[in-house]
Amino acid sequence: MAKKVRVLICDDHALFREGVKTILSSQSDFEVIGEADDGRQGVELAVRLHPDVVLMDISMPVLKGFDAARRIKKERPDVKVLILTVYDDEDLVARCLDAGASGYVLKDSPPAQLTYAIEAVSRGQQYMSPRVLTGVVRQFMAHPAEPKTGYDLLSDREREVLVLLAEGSSLKDIARKLNLSVKTIDAHKYNLMRKLNLHDRSELIRYAIRKRLVEA
Image (tube, rainbow, N blue to C red; front, side):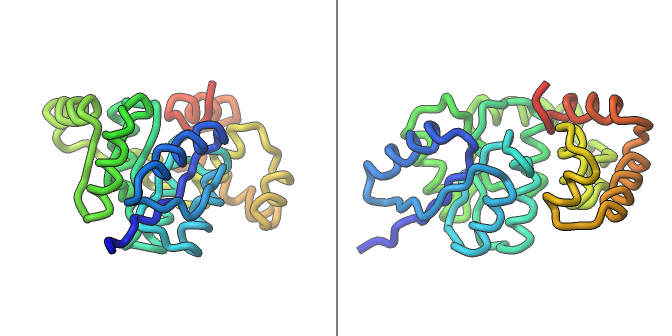
């Protein structure tokens, strides 16, 4: 009997997760072993459950999908991450691939495309939705060697603090959520704003919105 592909679903919309589970459970090749509704939980479950493939949304609470993917690949290099999102923005695609994602599928894709993509990345291949692939090729042709941005220079913790600050959390709230001291969070805030050349929270929020780290 062929081994089933063990899948972890990471998406903050319960109805969407149920839809994906219905699609996968209708076939004998897949087994959904867990669900996460925020990025940090997705990382924790990926490390603990060791799935074959993680289906990861980009717009996730606490930790965005590309940053969660980067952490998963760091902790579990053999776990494949397949981005499943509504965004076909070339910069986001590049950010996810740079984080170690093996594929990128749009949420309006047919179910058969999703199951094919899961099977492909589980075998060590890469997969991108046709519309996404066209955009990636177009961007590469226009900008074959993009320099690293300020965001690329941030540590995992600085990226996490950046998102929480942009979402309106106070230093005290962030310290409590991350189980760190206020002094440590303040140091992370100073460092990330220096690296990004930002001077106040309004600039930080505009930056986060422009980078699709938070919703406008």
